Length: 133
Image (cartoon, rainbow, N blue to C red; front, side, top):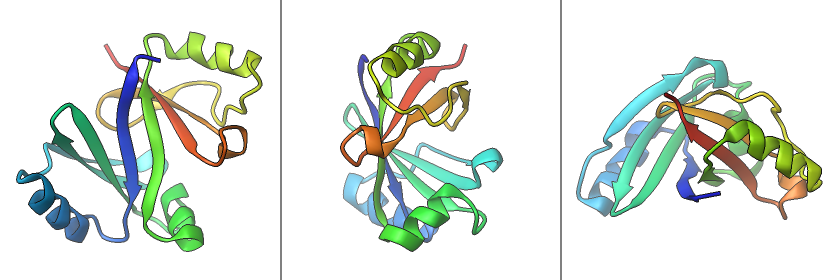
């Protein structure tokens, strides 16, 4: 893993949360998009070299809606930038991590993504990200 790619924060209302982060960072989101396959709207902010992703559910069955119903708003995941997501998934499976999606899928911000189950990572949902060509 090369670096922390971003920290994902689950929110009830992306517009309200975006106002908070615009004030915090002194700049608007640099990108907003919907990932229909995951039932989520996203907004990305930069703070120096660090990236924050806000996530709002677009339907009650989405992973974000379920997370908020169970835990409330807050940090949802930490994403790591990887060179080769397929190799990294295979390596981590051999190390005993539980991979939630063994085939990378298209995520937000032009990335291939895969997730590691929190039960195998001390309670933290880990996202692997690789820039799409």
